[in-house]
Length: 110
Length: 116
Image 1: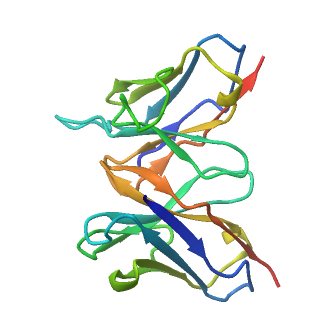
Image 2: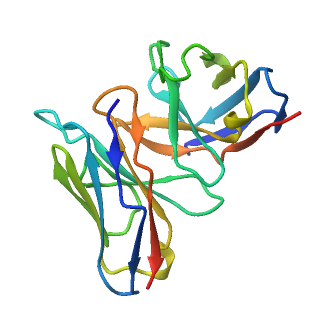
Image 3: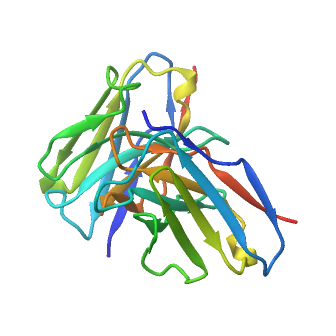
């Protein structure tokens, strides 16, 4: 199985940039796609798709969210961070089955 | 619009079978795949398995021996059955639609507690 590693938590100040990383145990990229996706989850809610295929903004997601990366290293950037962005963020790969998620990064206020 | 909604018992006894239903609207089960993802209290997300547009299924190998996913396209429903439940199967169970290899719409989830 592909293991995705995320830092458990990240503390940021409102208005600043947050960079959340995800490292895969093997490449999740093909010749055409980077099969890494990002989700936001707030307490008591279902996950929400933010970014698909590493860098594509999902529908209705604000442009302050962006994604980058290829191969085994991926990044979700939130700039600037707003109060509504305080949540847990998960990466997920669909390069091969079983689909796997990272353990999540909890974004906290500094 | 696209919607998914899970339903099923909130409490299951140990060693019993869990049966959940995901009722979808706004899209066709023959054109999209639907997956089940669970989340133990305070923990992360685990992909359990899914059913593809052609009706084939894939399962997480950790659950494969206990898990079955099926569907009724006429009712726009996807079913999950998992047997031999234990306390560590206590979780929120979500169904979600896959598109462009990511999960774009999710149900609200159903909390399942395994306890006697």
